[in-house]
Amino acid sequence: MEPIQASLKKWMKDNKNFQENFSHLRSAIVNDSQVKQLLLNNPQLDSKDIDRNLMKLYEFISQSKNCADCPVREECKNILPGYTPYLQVDGKTVRLSYEKCYKKIQHDEQEKQKSLIQSLYMPKDILNATFTDLDHTDKRREAITESLRYLQSIGTDKQADKGMYFYGPFGVGKTHFLGAIANELAKKRIATMIIYMPEFVREIKASLKDDSLNQKVERFKTIPVLMLDDIGAESQSAWFRDEILGSILQYRMMEKLPVFFTSNYSLEQLENHLATTTRGDIEKVKAGRIIERIKQVSREVPLFGVNRRE
Image (spheres, helix red, strand yellow):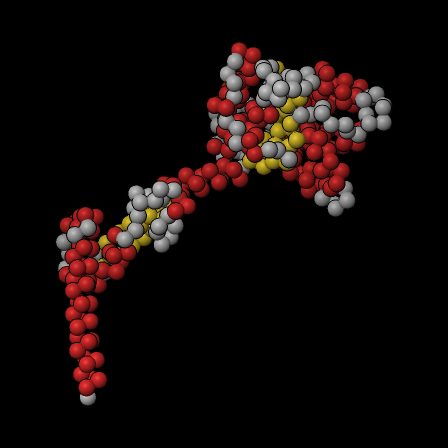
């Protein structure tokens, strides 16, 4: 009998401690400022209702609300990281629900924007470019003005259906303009694809081996905004110029889908460059046809400034 009596006394002692701890915990919960306000707004909740919903109330007060205790989203202390709890009362039942905190909303918004910018062989600093990063000098005024005018036209009756053909010397930030425009378009939920032309040519050639050519060309044709970086820097065959580039530009011209370009050549200089094929043939008529398509999907804009690569 002795062991049973000892166990009984221990249980009674522990039970007393449990009751004391429970009482302290209950007092802390009902005296929490937000819970107290909830109870004041819902006088129908009596003591039994509070006890019945006590675990929900405890879960609520033990978590961070509106990121107050979370320095960054990655260190969220809540049961559902990135979600903040809130209480609702339905009759005599307290319901605990969760909604995205503002840090998660910002993070998800940024991820959505990033997903709208597709790239083919473009460095990260270009994909993160903004207009505040650009040098606002007199030599770049026209390029900045035309870029902002294009962006401001989005969603209006006068929305531009042409992109821009930025041309100028090496290292003046032409590609950064593409990145900055792409990021602004992403904020407006408009998808873009930025392609580095020399790698694009190699990509197309490689796709002949795995039968993915038509699928890739279709993507380039139909993306809402296409950006071709450094056109003219690559050596291209007559086949690529006429069947690939020409086909993409023809489709976008017919569908009034804008294309942005960067180049070290003006359009006149680019025409001469495109006229000469990798075999050394001179085909001015076919090169002129490409230039006319470029003019239909973009406006020529000079871009000059200090060479950042020196």
